[in-house]
Length: 220
Image 1 (cartoon, rainbow, N blue to C red):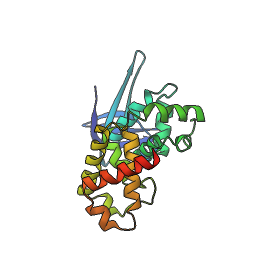
Image 2 (cartoon, rainbow, N blue to C red):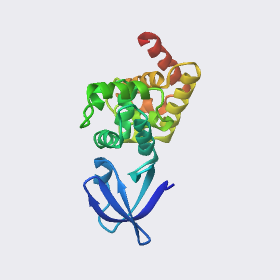
Image 3 (cartoon, rainbow, N blue to C red):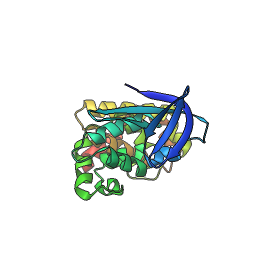
């Protein structure tokens, strides 16, 4: 099975790219978001690959990150979602946006993708709410946290902040809260601190857990 390809961009078409790996060209399918992010013709690219094998098919799907590939696999596990629909969703929503939509059960956001009706969108957010990859929790919080506008890049990219958020989420899930529920509470607290980036950047794990527990108690 092919898990990753590193080679030169040798051509791009509608829904696919050719990757030249030491003279062997692989046709890799992908989302519009992935294809639009590729480097130019003849330039080097590395793609995470999901190999799709059936009796009469052998297809390669490419992604710019392992998180994108994880979400593709999760989407394929939802009844009524095939590769075409999964890629359509990933063309419209980034990893963070898709994670946030599932966490907050926002079927309207998911149904923005072509070919995704309300029923399928509802099924996606319901079936995946407890299957969200661990890495996606922090990713989703780096853009626009629930309850407030996004942090400055310096806060969102701060490894100490990411570690604090991750530790708080782990503690809350160990207390029995669903990961999606815990994430909404933590991101709401982080969003409330947007007016003071110094506070967001220096809050301790214990303080974040305490404020998130209060949020859960008030809105649970």
